[in-house]
Amino acid sequence: MAGHIAHMVREQGGTVYYVGGFVRDRLLGLENKDIDLEVHGIAPERLEAILASLGEVKDYGESFGIFGLSHYHLDIAMPRSEKATGTGHRDFLCTVDPFIGVEKAAIRRDFSINAMMQDVLTGEIVDPFRGQEDLRAGVIRHMDDRRFAEDPLRVLRGAQFAARFGFRIAEETLALCSRMDLTTLAPERIFGEMEKALLKAEKPSVFFSALRRMEQLEFWFPELRDLIDVPQPPSYHPEGDVWTHTMLVTDEAARLREKAEYPLGLMLAALCHDLGKAETTRIEKDGRLHAFQHEQAGAVLAERFLARITNEKKLKRYVKNMVKLHMRPNQLAAQHARRRSFNRLFDESVAPDDLLLLSQADALGSCVSPEEYSRTAELLQRRLSDFHAQMAEAYMTGQDLIDAGFQAGPDFSRALAYAHRAQLAGVSREEVRSQTIGYLTSLESERKKQAE
Figure 1: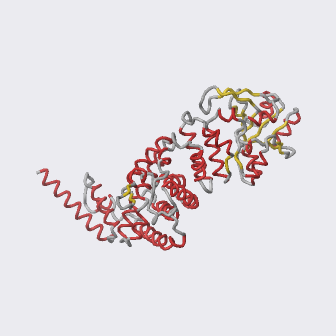
Figure 2: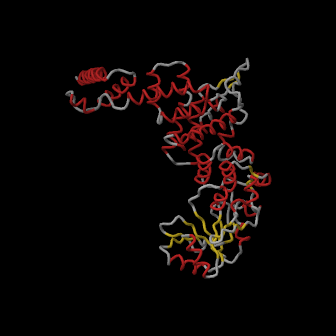
Figure 3: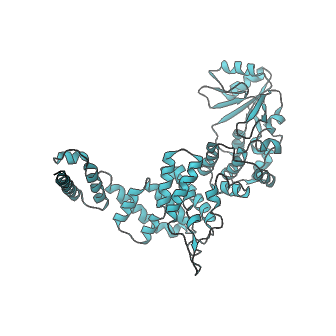
């Protein structure tokens, strides 16, 4: 469809270019299904007429000069100039100018690697700001000091691109980013850029390390900032302070995220798992370090952190639960705990399979080698498989109690909870049923006595 549009535009005297991330990713050999086109050299009404002849036109606003076609993944824009009218991400006055020229159209973009264009019909790359050179060198470089500083979201975008592509941010861009105010950004914009780094980058730590170099952790990520220079026992954590450990664990989790039931939740749990150490770490007189109950404190801090940037209740519940339980699998394995202890842990977890992935990332982020951890991983996986097999079907249900002659009542929930605990403890199906019936009989008998 892009080629068809380009041919029709050329007949009207204009040119259609692929622009932005589509060109960047094509040159990097990466797939990008979001196709952005920019149409030069014809009036907006002529473009709209061309598009209308091809299908249902989606108009995103005359002042923006952005159109779409129903059933096609295309954003079709006209060149425009932008002028900031405030400090927010959307506070811009846009003026459509299809005759502005490629250089003026490109300079409004954020980074040189996103300012390249490619003629849809000829394949020619138009690159007035050496984006290909920066792409080959692996550099994130901003386009224009004044225009860049008008949109604070670009600070997060720079860090996100550095993480996704493994690029470095130019020193002059880092310096400019460190002077920009991020406090006016909407929480969902912060979350969106962080999410891309967590789910698309091989090393998401680059995103947070870049923000640290920019001195931009203060407002949106204070819980992470507080981990810097928090010491850990060298015998358990030769990697260094809690910040360093957290970054390593987050990168290890990225290797495992495709296996996760909830990839974004796993990544955020890895990021937040040791937040509590900032509050609980103590140094004894003999120099020993400890962070007792840091997982409980961390669950509270994780909830506070996530409440600042998202309203996703499922995500917050998942991360809080994972942070609270993250130490337990490896501890139980080291203690050669009984099966019932593992069953109780897995039952308490909102995602026990993901909990084991987090525990693995935590160990590997403490400089434990995969070979060293393999025996622990095998034990945990066996225990989890046993749990899934044992709990695949409830040994006692409400219907079972009714079939046994009981009438549904207020004691049913207590009886079923009793049956569940017995099943977790490894009691046989027959014994669970017998014990539960006896328990419910005693509850009803006690209730009758109280009524008398």
